[in-house]
Image 1 (cartoon, helix red, strand yellow):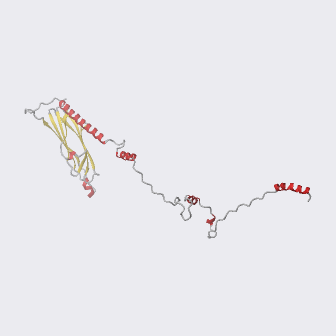
Image 2 (cartoon, rainbow, N blue to C red):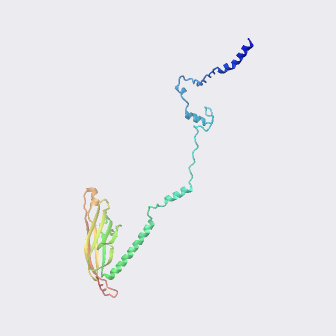
Image 3 (tube, rainbow, N blue to C red):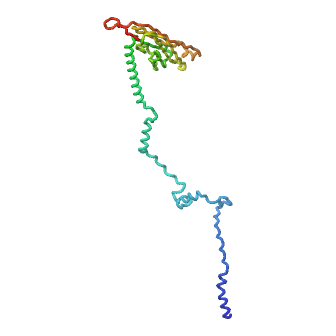
Length: 276
């Protein structure tokens, strides 16, 4: 070959090499999972479970037999210790025993009641002292209940000229016929009202309310005695269970009389006081 032609060929070889197209690399084949021997099981082609992957990763790279790590998802957590009582909890327990701000103070109310009762007794005593100096007639009122065997008294009261002079809720009038009021009044007419509320002892659903209003006349220079006795002579409280019938026998009997003034220490009758 002539030298000239060889030089031309040598000059064209690099240009041809540069213009040749590059060959594309074949795509990498994804390795198929090994056949588990169960045929065409659909679970073999399913994507791996994310939860299982996460749980397996926590085992520290352990093997399938579970020898890999102790921090996997199957590990049982240690039981939590019970919380200890703190000073704040003890203070809360103490506060539970204390009465709340909305509850009334029983001791304070009792002391207030006793103070008011003493003041009331003192006021009545002063009123009687003033009345004895102003008025000449002393009045004593007795009040009793005659049917204590079958009926109990839940409330009893006496009013004199509209003022409440006796009130009881313990059934005292069923125990005796004691004096319920002792005081002085002006000569002339006065209005006395007796009130009783009772219920059957055999059947307390049978209740009654009895009230009687009378006029008394005070005489100057003499004492006045008033004796009232309330009763219920009916049998409904104990007969209704047996025969489904019964009766009420309500009533208040009152006796009034004047009594001469007791003599003084010298044996002579006490002088009558001038009344208004």
